[in-house]
Image 1 (cartoon, rainbow, N blue to C red):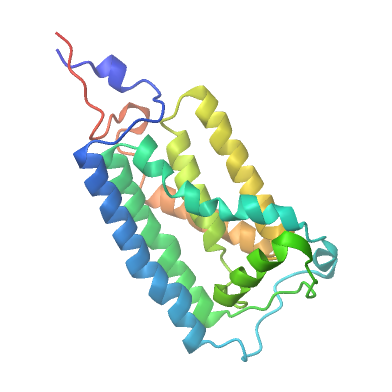
Image 2: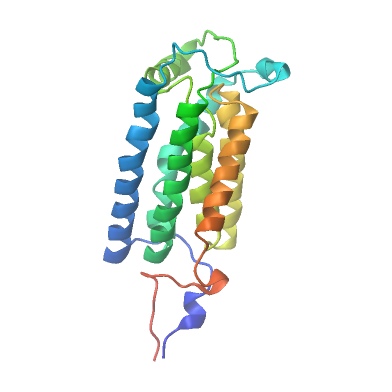
Length: 226
């Protein structure tokens, strides 16, 4: 008999099988195949020298920079391992389809609405200084709306939260909340960037819903009982 009751239970992190590895590989390949031309290619088509839109309000520019928040900000790279350890193959295929929506939307917005950051430059001392310097060498000052940092944090963490056990569900929600704060408190984004990043993630999740809702067992987690 197929153990459907066990399959539908919230699950902890687990080491992936071959199907999950293949689905994860496809997800990462699709992501980078779109991300590189969207994020870096648009910098050449809409260079920083072009006057960008000021999509922020004056009081936002007084939000302090908190240097240590760069570490939560950089956990985005760790976050990309979560689908491999938490999601089934089917769920990662869904995430792959979802990921194309914020990337293509962002590409259009970065070209049509190049923006400028409103925060004044802040001199950063201590051991955070080289981290910010490295970030500024690769980050674009006009690719702001929507925030892909926020969009992919939301896509991955909310997708993983759907199928996780209770402690992980709380962890994923807290992680997302910290990420939303980090992108602003490191002066990488404004509030409209965060809002539009969340919006495009919500659109992607609605456009590619979880198959079977709460009862979707997905590939790579099927068990059998006698």
